[in-house]
Amino acid sequence: MASTGIFDNDLILPGVITEIIPDYAQDYDTSSFGTTESVTIIGTAFNGPVGRVVPIYSPEHAKYIFGDSFDPTTRREASLVAEVYDAWERGCRTIYGIRVSGKEIYKDYSFATETKLKLRVSGIFPSNDNKEVYMNFFTTQSANGEVGTIRIYKPADRSNMKEKMQGLVLSQNQMLVTEIKLAGYGITKDSRLVDVINIVNGTENNNVLRLAIVNEEGADVTTSSKEAQSLSIGVMFPGLYTIGRDKNTSEVTVKTETNYVLSSENKPHENYQEPIWKELVVNTDVTKSYPIFAKSNGDLNSLLGAISVDAAGEWLKPVGAIDKITIKDKVDYEEAELEEFDLYQRLGSGFAQTAQIIEVKNNSGHVKGYKVTVPNSNDINRVVAIQDGIYSMLENHSTNYTVMSCANAESKISGKLPRKDSFKKRQAGVIMLKDNLTDVVELTARVDERDFSEATNVSVEIVSVQDGISQEEVLAKLTTEHKFERIVTITETEAQNAKFAEGTRVMVKPDVVSGNIFDETLTLKAVKNGTLVEVQEDGLFIVEHDNKLYAIELASNITSGKGLDADKYIHKMIT
Image 1 (spheres, rainbow, N blue to C red):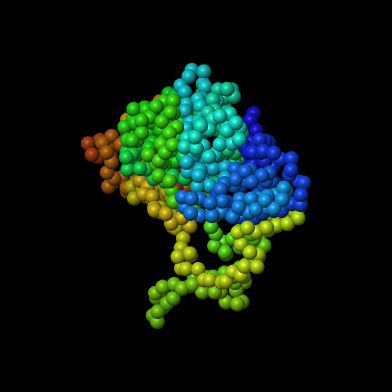
Image 2 (cartoon, rainbow, N blue to C red; image 1 turned 30 degrees about the vertical axis):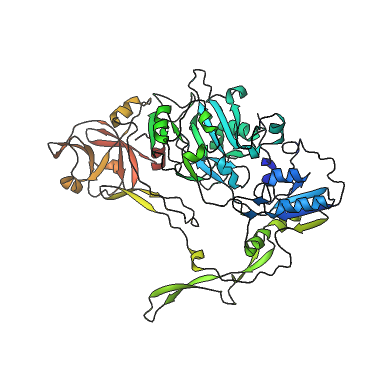
């Protein structure tokens, strides 16, 4: 099995030195490191790990890990690398660098199976340059179960020393492609997804992207979740995976289409055990949790407009190709320019005074507005500690000198009340699905309460497992002896005024059920000529009573059976 990616092990351990030999420093001269007194430099950067102590072996090495000290496009400066150059020129050869700020850049993608887990594609370090990086997963339909190829595209300025020495960098205006042929690792569609993740993260020339499996809260559960361990690469959708992009260009026709497929007819991989799975037919919407893909290259060509797609992925190689179909988001993931108080918070080991927002009422007691003020002196939350940060991490790091390159230690931070907008929170929208005026399903959007970007409109469409397939057809295809049909349940009073489509069957129960539903007489009825009439039919049915689901056997209007747990029903049933 391939090793984990560069820095992966160290990045999850607080207060450790990130060892970059041999992955990132194997072609740099490390012989002079440790020959002088040590200095640890804290500052801002455009790339590299955040909040980790990194040994620096030369100014060029610092530039490769942390980026340039100046961005000519945005006219912004970063202090860390410039200070490394200065320390080197003054004769220091034992230098450590610590990047103080940066925001993780990632996107979570859905799987073909019904799971709350997601595939997270993220930049290995916070950088706006990661918006130029993307991954294409191309699958094959071979009979032996071979899964296909993963290609990672990155700008030439993210090439490592080995790629330069191999002559792969012909120009700074080119995209480098790292191709991972999964068959060479013995990977089939039934192979574990975590094994593929380890291969991708451990690939030598992949110094830009990292894959992981995350849960609903966004926590990495790649190695800790049994469900994550059980996922196969066959449930990963093929297509183009991007990060840091939130809109399509005007030339693109936005379309998303998925199908639910019965496993009895076709499977995403041979050992797939669930009754249904989701097939991605086409997606060109970069805001969706699917990669950009179409089963037909012709369809993808017609939808993407300015791009000519080919099966080999050559269309993704030109610089700027991705910009013709998607637009970069406006988020600054580098945070190279921080306000003094933001920097103070990142450093930690200090204290801060809080603020609160209160209602302002008129003489009649009605709220007329809000204002920001300082809590009373006896409020226990008036002053709070800022504990975790760079300083607390440095307690476990031995160095002769520490240099703050982005501020003076004696800088005085004056207090300033935040604006009212700082207290705003985004509220999630709720969609309630009803059945005969009864709330059946509540859908709540998952939003970041601090994210005030443009709201996304969400529509809900309820479709059958396959277009044109009835519940009877679904039941007929299930390979089990006990097949229960889900049926609408109404009371005798509701039956008098109920209006259903011709042929609809319903289960009628008494208005008052004094005890167990199995002790009552249920009547099966169907709509004939616009009227509900009794139907003499035996069978197995799922009925609803008192917000619970029950499996019953109907024989000559005598019910028998047992209650069925609703969660298990929803998990196991198809429709």
